[in-house]
Length: 157
Image (cartoon, rainbow, N blue to C red; front, side, top):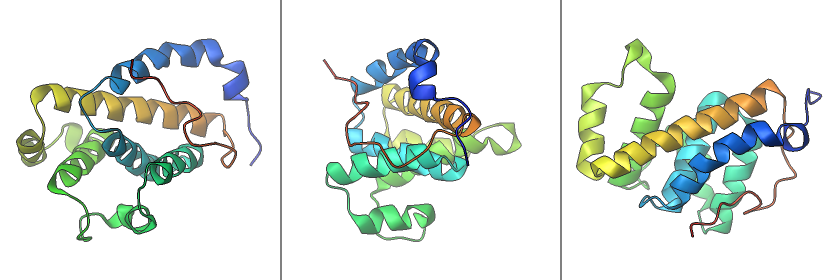
């Protein structure tokens, strides 16, 4: 598939508006690997090749195992995700898909057991951010493959 618009080159001003959210999330109490795991899972749901390439590379650079990446699509059946990760993944899926127009109460209750209110708000903002990036990259067919780990990292300072 041919790219429609080179987002990295032509949409800098537009995408820059979203960078503030990235800077906010870089200061979040949520672990960066947890955020990248959520970004990777949401990108799987949305089918964003660019973001899958990016977040898989960032996760691997941070020490994530191949096994956990390969099986992430079936995390419910896999034994090697923590309760906190499971709660985050379930929350991320529910916020991304919004089946029935809301996040079910049982998913919220599990998430509240693992996350403070501030963390759950930050997790929700992270899901909103990756869904936005997925839609931009899918709409304009941003090609995958050239991303280098940490290329778009936002400093936490």
